[in-house]
Length: 431
View 1 (tube, rainbow, N blue to C red):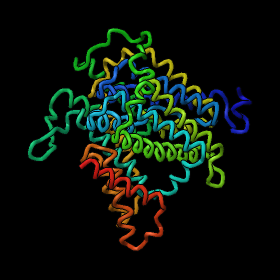
View 2 (view 1 turned 135 degrees about the vertical axis):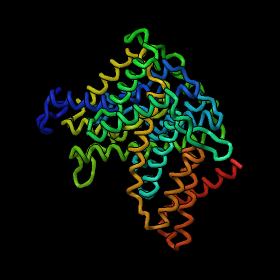
View 3 (view 1 turned 90 degrees about the vertical axis):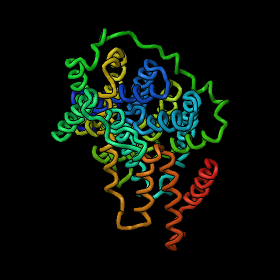
View 4 (view 1 turned 180 degrees about the horizontal axis):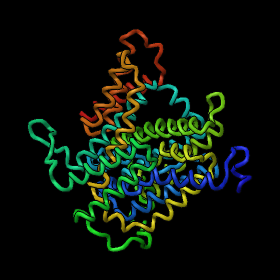
C-alpha cells in the first residue's frame, strides 16, 4: 500500500494521510444531509437519496484514490443539486425520474469529452470571466434558497421578496447556526460547516424545536426508489427541455470540477510547469462519478474544494481519499440523524457555501465592460429568475454580442458563436 501510493516520494505516511482523509471528510460531510434535503424537495425518497449520496461519494473517492492517486474528495455537487430540484423539477415541471435520466446523459457525454481530450478544448474556448460569474451566480442562488429555507426571505405581492418574520423560533435557530458557523470559519476551523450543523441540531433538540431521534444507528435505508431509475427513464428524455438540463449540467461540471482539481493540486504542490500530472485520470474520475451517481439516484458529482483542508493537514496521496471514502460509507448507518437535520440546520450551510462560491466575483475584470456586463447578468439572473440555466444563457448571449460590437469578433472562439445561436433559439422556444 505504501509503495502503491508512493508515500516515500511524496514525503508522507499512513498517519498523516489518515488525518488528511478524515479532515476532508469532516469538511465535506455536510453534503450527506444537505443534498438529501434539497433532492427530497423534488419529491425523491429521502432515505434512498441519503444512501445514494453516501455511496456515490464513497465510490467516487475510491476511483480518485486508485486511478488518479490524488487526495481529492468527491460527492454530489452543490449547485447542480439545486438546479436539479428547483429549476428542472419544480420550475420546469419535469418529473424527477426524467430529470435524473438527463443527468445520466450529461454524465456519459461528460465522460466521453474527458477521455477524448475535448473537455480541455471547450474549457479554453470560454473566457474565465464567464466561468467565474457562473460559479458566483450559483453561489448567490444557493444562498438565496438558504435564506428562504431559514425563513428570512419571503414572497411579497408588491416587492416580489421581502424580509420575513425573523423572530420566529425556527428562523432564530437558523440565524444562530449561521453565526456559529461564521465564527468557526473566521477562526480557521476546517470542518466549520459540519460542526455548525451539529451544534445547531443540538441546540434545536435542547430547546424542543427539533425532535429527538428515536435512534442513531440503523440499517441502510432502501435504495430501490432511485436505483436504476435514470436508465429506465431514458426513452422519455426526448423532449426540448432536456437539452437545457444536459447542457447546463455539462457546463457547470466542466468548470466547477476542473477548477477545483487544479486549485487543490496547486495547494498541494502537484503542478509541474503549470500542468497537472495524471490530468486525464483526475478529470476522468469525476466524470465516471457523475455516471455512477445518476444510476444510484442523485444529481451529478463534483470534486470538492473542501479537499484543500485535507491537503492543509498533510494529505498528499490517494490513500487520504480512501479514508474519506470509508468515512462516507460508515456514515450511511447514521440515517436516523436525518430527523434532526431540519431546514433550520441546513439553511446556514447553504448560505455559507453561497458565500464561498460568490468569492469568484473578485476575479472578474470589472473595469472592462465587455466582461463585466455579461458576468453581472450571468450572476444576478440566476437568483432573480430562479434558474441557473437562464443566467448562463443570458450571459452567453450578452458576451459575444458585446465583443462583436466592440470590433473584437475575431477574438471569439467558434464555439462561442455556436452557443450564441443556441441560446437565442432557446429563449425563442421558451417564448
